Structures are given as C-alpha cells and as structure tokens.
Length: 175
Image (cartoon, rainbow, N blue to C red; front, side, top):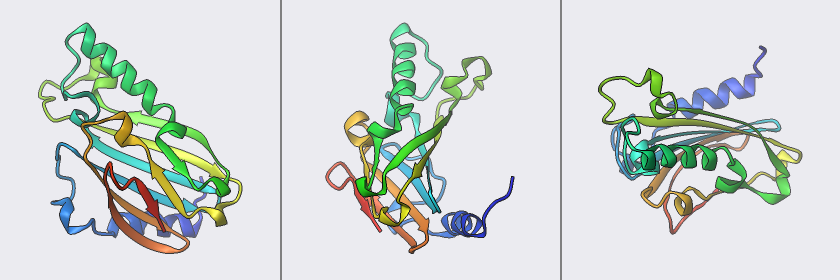
C-alpha cells in the first residue's frame, strides 16, 4: 500500500502534537474524556476516537446481563453510523466510507480477565468531494453519549496542526 507524503506527515504530526494542558497525561484513562485525532489527506478525512467504555456504556467490563449486552449492541450500532456522530463542513460533500471499532466488549470470547478499565478505539473514514471546503467538524458524540464530558482533539492537515477541547456546549471544531 503506497502512502502519500502528506498522509505520513499528517499522521506523524498528529502523534507528536501535544494535547491541551487540561487533557492530563497522554494515554491516561479518564472517565468523561475522550480523544479524537483528525487527519486530512487529499479527499480523505480520517477520525480516530479513543474513549473509556464508561463514557459510552456506563460500565467497562464484559457485559454480564441482558441489559448490558443490549447496551453494547446499541453502542455498536450507534457508532456504526458516523454521519450521525460527525458532521464535516457541508460544502466539502463528505460521505462515510468505513468504520472500524475495536474493544474487548465487542469480542467477549477474547475478553481479558482484568477488564475493569476497557476502552473503545474507533476509526471513521470519510471521502470528501470538495476537500478544500473542509473547514469544520461538528461532533455529535455528546448528545448520544451523555456520560462524555469532553473530547480532546488534535488536527493535522494541509492547513497545519491544531488542538482543541470540545464539550457539550462547544461541539464544533474549526481549522
């Protein structure tokens, strides 16, 4: 698979870009907080979400009851509809092309014994017909997952790098 120099640069920059000071230690498992990396490369908009399951489900262990199993199914179905969770600038004409979700609760047979602080990693890829018009991203995670209180965002794209903290009151990212 051939990667463009811009994509490599964007992904490297996203990995190196520090989160705002309010985010705490990198990689820290903090309930109520998620991280979102935004990479723009040509017509491709890639969003990588990492969040404790507590923010999405209200628990972080393998589902034990029918109610918890239903909650996992509902979470998976909701996250599989990225157009309801992420709204790129309408003028950019972006459409969802793929979703990949990874979490121990989605693979119960492989659930580790000590799963008290499990996360979910999601990758959402959009193709944009007019990427030059891509200037904002509205994040609708807060209305679907009320335990989520903030999202620390890093953006890497043709206009440079930026970082922001989103909240239920401030859901629009602009660059």
